[in-house]
Image (cartoon, rainbow, N blue to C red; front, top):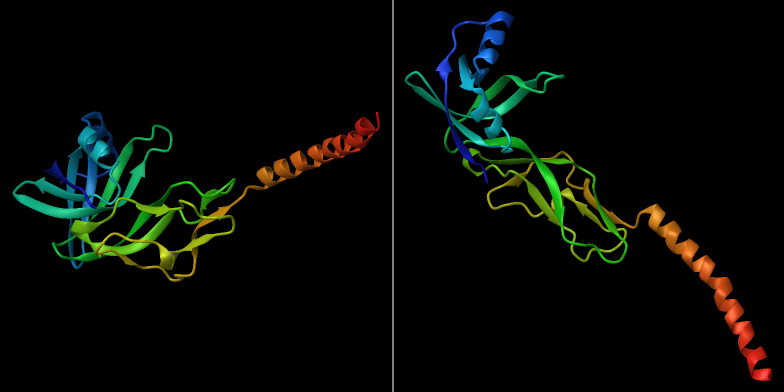
Amino acid sequence: MATTIKLEGEARTEFGKGVARRLRVAKKIPATIYAGGTEPAFVTLPMRETTLALRHTNALFSISFGDETKMAVVKDVQKNPVKRIIEHIDFLEVKAGEKIDVEVPVFVEGTPKGAAVAFVDIQELKVRADVANLPEKIVVSVEGLTDGTKVFAKDVVLPEGVELDVEDPEESVVTVEVPEDATESTAASEAAAAPAAADAAAAAPAADAK
């Protein structure tokens, strides 16, 4: 479920590329907290703590700046394409008890039968949940599933209080199948074994004749 992370920031009153560069030198990240129907709040956040916090998917942030504290979730993260450092973050303010839509990464656990392998068809699944109950990941069990089995969105077991929010509940989330190279390898082994078996069968009567 959602991890609540507290960040101590500062109100931001200066803008522009020059300001952004100075903030990066000072190990700070500019951020904007958007709220429906009201003016956004502009803040700066500590670079190290914020970067580490963003490792948590769908975390709930408690951001303090000046005499204000806002609860928010990450809306967008802008990174430098070369240095990969965070240049700006957009947050969306939320209220206690509010439900929002989030994209949750899909993982599989367990081992299918035989040579079958599980393939994730949808990397992220859209769900709706309370801001205090946002899942970091969705795990689909493939234990014992056979070749050709599909797990559809409607069949995914979600955490309590989390609702599926996709356009097509019949969409495949995970497919279990035997890879082509494994099938070809098995066929090749069987083909190679066939002549040997035939030779052994032919040799048996000859040995009996002696």
